[in-house]
Amino acid sequence: MAKRTRAKRKQKTETNAIDEIEAPPAERIYQVIQSIPAGSVATYGQVADLAGLPRGARRVGRALSNLPKGSRLPWYRVLNASGRSSLPPAGAKRQYDALRDEGVAVVGGRVSLKNFRWQLDP
Image (tube, rainbow, N blue to C red):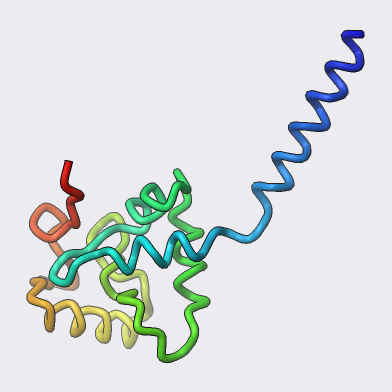
């Protein structure tokens, strides 16, 4: 009987591993980003945590890279853990310009997360 239990556990573990490989829940990521208020920023890791994807910062980046052209999602409000853009120079300039338009100070290519990070109300 113990062998059957182990086999079932192994099968269940393998099924869970396959579920983890599935496409990320981009809709939850997009909902979190849509919730970031103007004048605030969030990090990739923060968005992942709020979307229920702990340690899923790269998934957030992938979801953002797959946004359709013309999307109105405020993608520019998402920065890396250092408060910097993760985009190439032309994209970073566009991102920083959009943030400045919302009143976010960008100094030396960096946003102060202490001052502008989105804080959820307790």
